[in-house]
Image (cartoon, rainbow, N blue to C red; front, side):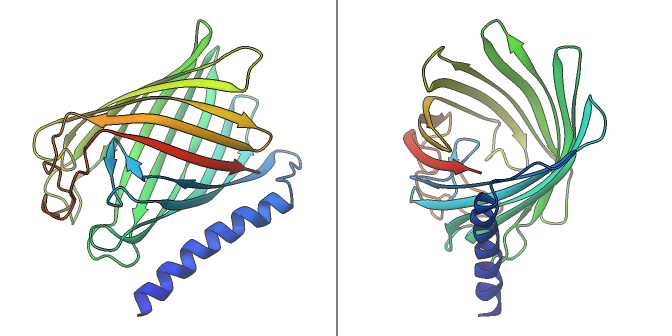
Length: 249
């Protein structure tokens, strides 16, 4: 009961904070800025895998940015999602921080993120992230890596290498997106894992509607996570079309 109350309080505080920030219109004052986001998605997919038994999830977060110099900024934030109580717990809360900047026309990011599952036992873990990004012709692309050192609840370290590209169609509210990821280690579901997605988003004022086809090279019932058996996470790696409606403030 205490765990459930704590979980609901965390998720409610993040979501309420998102709408409160929206009311304040995330006004920038000097080098400090605060933004917020909230969304509902048809399936919470993480690196191609469903973490909520392919059901609807409500999500929201807040981000703070502080400009240190013209080329370097500090960022920190939190994000939360509803989940599935029979697998990873009924909620997930992420906290993250790091530095971002640019050198010439190349952007970069270096930071860390902690994944917290308030009503589940022994699932919390953290990762370190590095990324470079920039314009490639008319598109924007990124290449990055997440590294999770061996921790108390894992058997080995984990690597996740990803790339994504987006293209905003000129004079339209439509952006095309695609991603590809490769994972190996503690969270790779046995052998190494590939995931990919392709989709498009439609923006209107502060709102964005996204549709994406998501898939992995793992067959039905082959995925397990943090000791969950394939029976616990049915169809987690199946192909699916995921719809997300989000708002940013």
